[in-house]
Image (spheres, helix red, strand yellow):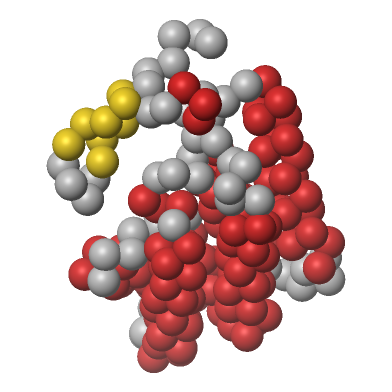
Length: 178
């Protein structure tokens, strides 16, 4: 299929390994895994329809890509997704609470503290070995939607949990599509 690279690096052992032939994705895997991602993200959007946390839903959409298209990657592991969202949401809440203390115009304060929140989230995920890049978007979402800290945090955390739950439920059937 389109010259797939079947040589993967086992990051924990630092050695290359050949992917077994039965693990090669077929067209049905592309269709089913895309539909699962659409269902998971659609459920999050439907559940949060009346909330103002659409940036957090965008981060969850990126998580769905990793969980359903690259399920064997380190960033798609359950631990990385859950701890990544927890740390990122905490960093966003901390920076959103500091927003009132910054003596700058609101737009400038939001811009600066959004960057700080993303940086703190990246630092936290790096030192705990729970890197999940889309979760940094949750930190930014919480700061941008600082008027709705609780709602945005809940959307980010529950959205990450929802995508992980669907990915975990179908995990044994998911194939790496990259």
